[in-house]
Image 1 (tube, helix red, strand yellow):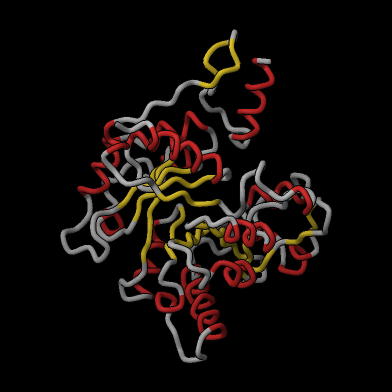
Image 2 (cartoon, rainbow, N blue to C red):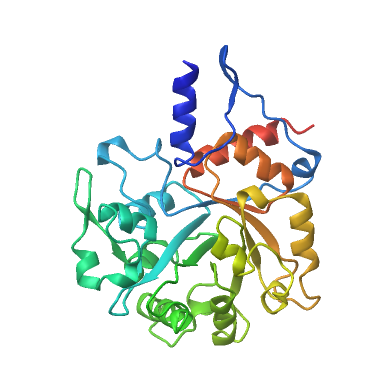
Length: 327
């Protein structure tokens, strides 16, 4: 029974290693998660669905759950009432925008291709996903049309920059497409990305893109920066620290922290790095990507303002349980 629970915990966490929620090998009872004073003194963190509903919450009548970022997956996240949804933005070889994470592309191609920039739009659109229906990759416009103007508190646009063009023109392409969607779904009058999607927050693993978004929107857009240390390349790029990144850390709406790095100390450092005249107040801290109960408790007890997750219902349940145990 213990082994089964551990396997289930591994599956729920998306295959990533996480502390087991099991009390001991002699019992299948989960650990009693206790809230911290920090958590109890703060409002509940926003739970951001990473392009879909949880693996156990996809309607069985609709067959196998499609990959995140597809139209049915995003529509299900909106219909489930999640206040925040993330959409991944990538560019094809022929410079079209698609809603696709490199991880999903690798799965779709049997491991052959992991960079959307290596395939044309037509090649990507020819890929189908397993399920009761033939789900396909969504264009960025199709994905955003599902979530914009649906009453969400936040739509996170996560830039997946890669070769051949990497950051070059990426921010411009995305903000231009969002502005175009605003015109087509609104009055037809000219709109900026910020008026078309005031709930949009733009982040990625490139400070340059965040700064480009700020420049293109005259500082009006909400941007984020990443704090991570999961690879040598990320560390070499300096994303594991805030020092030397003042251009973005002083003006950002949010810091997106790798969950293992989320701590009260980091949250305080992020807030302290914000400029006094920052348009959106003190910079918030979100943790990503959190898919298991123990990991959820760890980051929310540290005091994060948001949690990005592939399992939004599971995370929301943990938050509710912890809140109910606050004195």
